[in-house]
Image 1 (cartoon, rainbow, N blue to C red):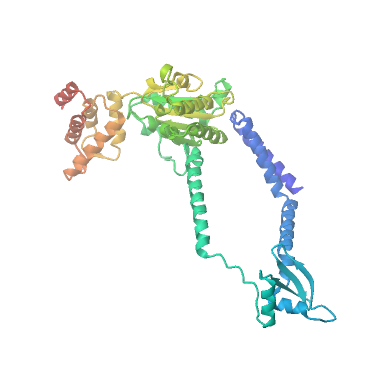
Image 2: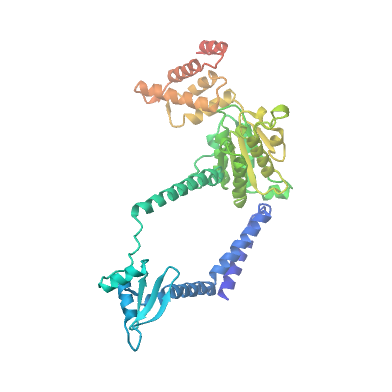
Length: 457
């Protein structure tokens, strides 16, 4: 009765938790429900006292059968062949030995005065046996030589080597299937990141902030008939803050977060990459709603080859096909797994990957304008002492085309120059020197842009 009440209480609490989440029914796949039911049956079976009592009884019976009768038996004593022949040759009213049995290996088992004995046969000719008995020579079969330790080690070494190789191959080919898509735990995720740490890309930040609002409170959107976006792709040049936006999104949303790189699915063995994708989405579906972040998606989602080049990279195409099926296939009916991807090579991605239904939103993260550069410099110099806060206006004016990561590098270089002068406050001269050093050290900067920067400085 208590067990039934406990199960009923757990079921009621589960129903209350499901009612508190409007989209909880959408996030659970049929396969997941079947696994949950199976797990409940197993836990219910193990919780019964009768099951454990049966296991204990079976263990006691096994112990009684193995160690009970054998421990009470008296071990037989060995008699040499000569003594056995003398006992059988004596003429008495009652035989000296009884219950003689011969094993398949020629070992004779018998009893002498009620005690068990055995004798190993000696493969000698009859005349020789008579001669030895006539002269009273005591003889018997020699004991089998024990197996040497060296022979045992020689047999165990190949087995140990094979076991080690099997373990290595299994770890490399099997267990590494689940290594892609590492779940970032709550204690390792940087929860201090907020949208205030993102500056200069206001439009992209607004779109990502709206997605976080949907994850936090989906009720108004469900009431309006909206559905959860299945994917968001952050597209922009390197250093514009795509990965930072994904990290802030994970910290602000408060849902499980899986991080992986596109190169994690590039495998030499055929089928390994596709298996990793399946296992990643299977784990993510169990913790839905959740976020799966693909960094550098272009390593995984390149345009599939056509014509003469078709089949040149079957493994990569199989992995991409599996990703397409997991994101929007027959069995993925808005299961609550939100895919967030970042790439700076949008033109190389496959059209089937970027279509609506897989990536509902394409967020462009561009190079900030002058006002955005000033806001970005303000964020990157929060821990610095500036001679004049107004100098950031000048810094934003002399850094056209720089991204947020480049502005962070310039600000750090300016602080290093101030420390080089044994000064705590960072001046405008430090920033100008850092900007000039940055532009001149980048060989990819066109010559006309370098001349323009020299004129501005």
